[in-house]
Length: 139
Image 1: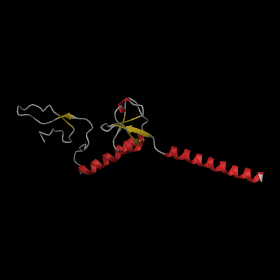
Image 2: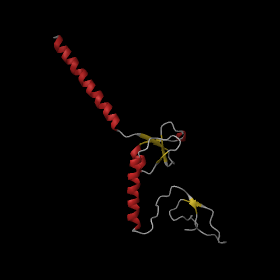
Image 3: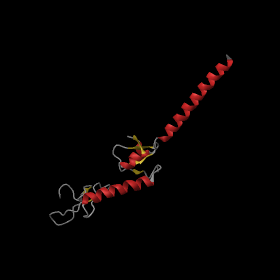
């Protein structure tokens, strides 16, 4: 009777051990979690000061796919190879859309000064993120 009891306990511990191993490996298989803000263009670590008011947890590969860049303050681990692949695929899409003409960045990250002219033939002072490089008044 004691042998049967020992065998059952051994089987129980084996099942628990296998279960723990499966849990550990499954948790390691998920991608690295990074955080983005509602309005930002960069991804951050959990303790970054820029996440003070809003943060949303996403996986690193999704953050890179959506065009987020790593924060220069908290310096989260970045996957340079993944960045390079995404940029290459984006540039191929842009080349296809432009049909061999001059490549136009469809999504500007920085605002630039409007290239339009005022009545007095001076350059417009407004900033724009529009792909054409012109503000709402000069389009």
